[in-house]
Length: 364
Image (cartoon, rainbow, N blue to C red; front, side, top):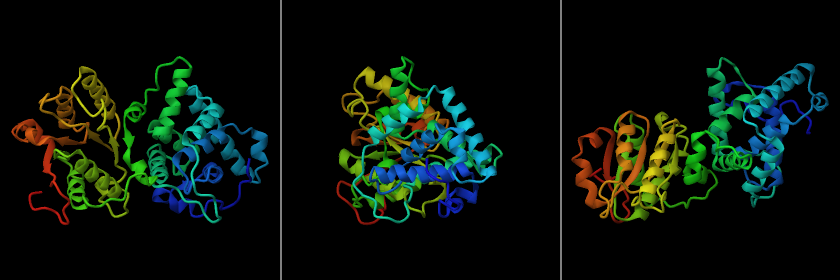
């Protein structure tokens, strides 16, 4: 266990939303997470590194806490937070050591050896801290504790965390963990996370259309979208460009903390079978339990199946504000959707030009 240094996390409180106070636990977790990232040669500190740090901290014995070089008051806070973390993990029957080792394996290694200097968090990590700060505030605390960060990460896990939690449940013969995002991540991709990891190509040829898309998504009503295009690649480029824009600091407040989950290839990219329909319906039901997410869905129709069964569920959920989505709409389906009064209430239809455009088109 490393020594707890005064002011160990430069600008810790200013790095947490609303300048909330941070506990000694958070300072120590920050150090441990940086060490995890450095050891695995990551350029920045990922959310998984913070979770591994929390799990490692939870295994710390009281005598070890007393040897950290912190004062009596700080040791008392650390001890209380260890107990609270153990209680939360115990409720979920989580084996800290096993989960940490499997998570380290799944996350793998980066390709940026540490050259010295301050380690920074990824946008996804900053997002978790902001949400943890809101959780702390909502619970009446003016201090961000380790428990707040743990709960935030377990309730809205990254794909890697969702995978290890599901594996842990399966290994014990238990049903998969009830967190809805675990199932969503089993079948989709968190595009915000791919942007943070620079795993989406930097292609801005659909930037103008992406900005129109974000303008609609940021509205309070009719904020879902059908992108009319027969070219799947044009749709994907538009959505990916929009996700990159979400990572910028000057986005509208209504889009802050929004995450786009890509389910566009669910069922092999088709919706022809009943199994695919059933899977999409279950995914929609899980998505309705999670806030601040936008679903990138498979095509909402085809020549062989004009209106897939799952779209009726989607329509009802969107009408009640439970789901927000972006979906490709084949050109032959445009009139069907535009003449449907129920769809008009929840979604806007946007046509994508066949070729890239350099400015916002007047038809949008």
